[in-house]
Amino acid sequence: MAARLVPCRVPGLCSRPRIARRSRENQTSSRCRASEEDWRSFRANLIQSELMTTEEGAVVDEKEASGSNPSASTGATSEQGLWAHPIGSRPEKGCLIIARPDAFLESQRYFAEAVILLIEYSPFSGAVGLILNRPTQFTLQSLGFDITSPEDGSSSVPKPEDREKESPVNIPSFLMENRLYFGGDVKSAASTLMCLHPFDETIIPGAQKVVEGVYSNGKWFELGGEDSPAVALDARQYKFFAQYAGWSPGQLERELETSQVWIAAACSPEILLKQVIQLPKPLWREVLELMGGEYEVMSRKQYGEL
Image (cartoon, rainbow, N blue to C red):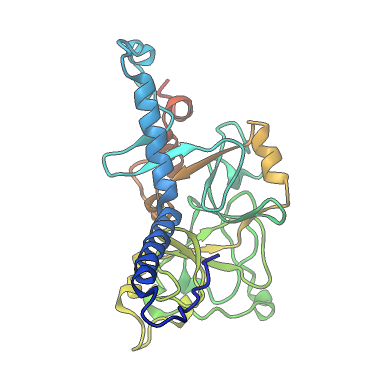
């Protein structure tokens, strides 16, 4: 909490010291805000730096000598500045929850190789996530009502006779061609259609910060009018999701601790908003390779390269 400023009651006294103190307080406040904004990047750089220092002086990398040459580091940065690294079994808002290669082969196949962004997390209320790499065959133009939960990851919409039971969705015309993603197997009666974008509440009122540069929901459906900010009218900046993935309090932590279902990771914001349609490399594989080490090996084995 910021200290409350008390006015000096003696004329001619304290004015200069108070100006200097306020300047120092403003500088401290600015540093705190900057720290809050970029601590994830700082952590990623710190991890990468420590790993490079640890590995310095290694003459021959065992994996390189074997010809497989996966990155030895656990947490890497690409030429484009993208980064990802594991964070253990303690999830956090804005992290990725990544399906392990052998998970969900028999049931809930829509989670196989899923990359899920946690848009909400609390150890007391649980977690809410969106699957980033499950685009459907539908665009928003085909969505005039909520869609039902697909089975095993397939995409489907309600039967015509069910339309009267669903709430209409107001979609601005410039977003009509955006692809709809399957966000998870939980359907909320209050808000089935969810949105990710890079715009804060000054551009889209009501937008909720996930991590710096990535926001969810808000009144995006009011865009398109003459008063709409031009920067917000780029349809490529939005990802829309039908439904979401959810965990009760403690459930996700227990699943992470088994090391059999999920991997928790932090990553650069650019990865979170990437459209995953016709990518040269699947998102699941890209993130694991950025994480390096055992995770890159895991990815390459999954795709038959090792």
